[in-house]
Length: 315
Ligand SMILES: [Zn+2]
Image: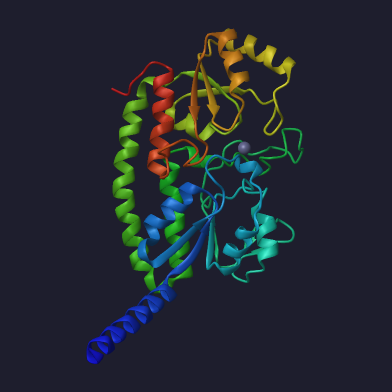
């Protein structure tokens, strides 16, 4: 009996110590939004532990900081983010408070500086870059349009940037991250080709969205987003603007309204009634809509919502 329990104890100690040392090798990564959590998990696999910040249902421009975010960021080896200032509501403040030497806030640009900063927008061909320093076009897209996560093809860039970032932070496992990247892309790229085929009938379609967050998605779909319900990015629709929008939609035969799930359904319904356009509800992040916890599911659901709204079924 005594020998038996001693053996058991030895096994327990061995298990505890081996799981401790295994955990010690895992990188702690914070990702700002759900699809970045998903892709980081795919690329990092067992080598990383990923924590997310914003919930998918939130407006990324208005994510409220929580004390738990500071704790997560304080202990992290790296932070994965979309960049282009889209996380302006929470990331600069957190970097400032968390005081993590691996990722600090640049006092001038407010950006992330340090080896733990993994900016997924690196190498992106930024759309809607402001031509002047004037803030007249709204203050929330100061570096150009930051909503590239809505474009399925930009998932490839995101995954590559995450793999490069993890390899930089954890050079020892660079080969593993590259292998996982290859496996992920071998799954994502055929899906992208399939979505391209499904959405071919949308080419040339005119549409409006609530917020100016669909230019990259529009490019992927071949859909021309001619205007927004918002007056400017971050500025709520006014009655005058809405009346002008009705006129514009009728003139240009706009038959699709894309409503991002966090925005006002009633005003979209009003506009649909006035113009005869159909409404497609999309998510601006993974997990915004049920069953969209991964980048792939998020991309597919948005595409299907648009196809269904315009009476195409992707066949
Ligand atoms: Zn925006």
